[in-house]
Image (cartoon, rainbow, N blue to C red; front, side, top):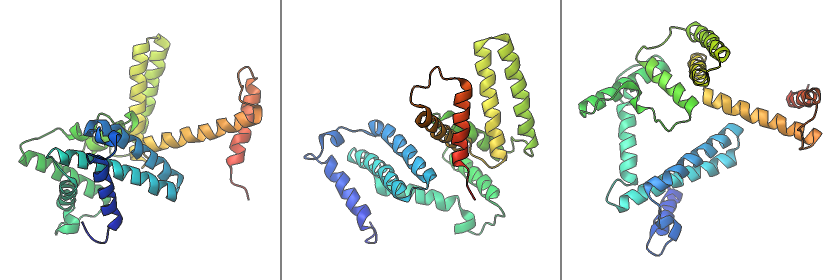
Length: 263
């Protein structure tokens, strides 16, 4: 480990001590599998801090993510598996291989070209290792549904399975909404659920074409709704049940107005 990273070396030492025979009972009983949910949870908390623009919070949450990564590597190394050096070497090698326009003599003219080359190189590596997989196999099933839909559409688009411009997915949204309306009219809950899923998937494809991430967009909207709803609760009190809708709407409009920039 480089002498220029004393705090990273210190963190590695702290984690090793936590896992030592005389270390922390809780840390000692963890496994790679038991740590996985914590890694996911801390990643979400880091995303929230980054979205808030909270530098101090982001640094803390990224530290929690790093700790989980290092803990998992430590646990696995104790069983004779990969360690941090192997993890770091693997990702460094992969980054070099998949950036021939930086570390080789290949030339690219856009970020889209970089992504296409990345996917092509990935498929070549899998084929060479005799483990060919479908284009969509690398999208984790555990991703949140909106993010998974976005990534699936993106992966398919990289091999040409896509509309040429945003008008295609926009028209698809209208088509799927009409099919959803028809399913609602029929009253079949299973059919409604299926058509609603098609609408959401179509919106994810549209988001990709207009340069938006649907997971981040929805998270932002949910946060906005929560802020405004809490404003309504502060104005009208926590017991909103039974209040006239007109009164609730008026308070909601005041919440919106309070967020508008002045001047």
